[in-house]
Length: 377
Ligand code: UD1
Image (cartoon, rainbow, N blue to C red):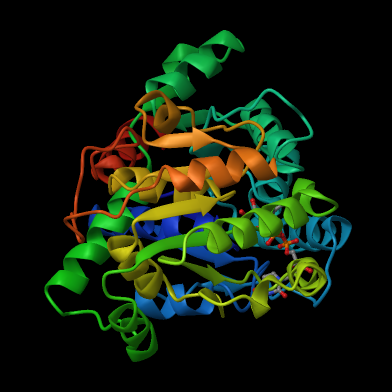
């Protein structure tokens, strides 16, 4: 990098972009690239454990989160603060990840100030602008303004080519989530990272049971979808007395409202718990027999660990898991979900550890950092 150019600035703010960009931040620093980290603070509760886990401290924190914030609040708050920060530190490159409000607003601020944007996890699409909402719009917008596109898979890269993105600016590297996942599993296995006693105790008490991890937080499911998902869980638990479902509840109040309405949290063998710190989530993934989720990151993590996944969305932007037969696209249809859950068998060998992942081989950060050093600065 020339002495006159500004730093590389990585912008994080939610759980997925923090998990997926911190390993890249560490790799860029190892390559002696002048890199600064900015957290928008879009999520307060959901990210503080990650900051502690990876032992990093953001150089800047916008602290934007307000209880009950809506998309207008978070978008305008990030945009205004990013304008000020970018004008002050004049980054040579702004790196954003995925499809969150944090990523879209930071990319917009960089675009307005004519600062190049690098997009990590580029090219994911459902091709339905309303699903996921507003994430499909966010990532399409970022594709329009980005100068460098790091696609996690060949399918994602092809999507960008089909949209006319300059192939010289598209790099297929794998998804950095696999790097983060393998890093944390290694630390847990070597006992260098402690998993909370309460989560270990929960699994100890469920020995020989069939255990499914449930996560659900998508906006497009809030009206009816979430209730269908919860009713399907009730039916599945009734049908199979050996089944236990663990549900770390997203803090969005809409989730609690749906739980209260369906009374799912009153059902035996249903374990509604607080959101899990990342090492506890990874430990959970290592010990469950199946996953039911509408999260993109957990689909990737589960499939990377060879765990069957029931996708609680009408379309998926990560078709690789469905294509390799580990994931079933059940949507929010009650019958489909119950039938997909009944296909999950108890895994004979728990803690199967690393698997072949269609989402990457754990070297995405290294690849992206080298490309940034040689091509983007
Ligand atoms: C956001 C991302 C989504 C990602 C998810 C991971 C957008 C548009 N979507 O969705 O892609 O999968 O993060 O969590 O950015 N809340 C809290 N405490 C927290 C986090 C959220 O109270 O720690 C509340 C917020 O105040 C808000 C609601 O949950 O009322 C929704 O949060 P928001 O950041 O708007 O989007 P998510 O649905 O979490």
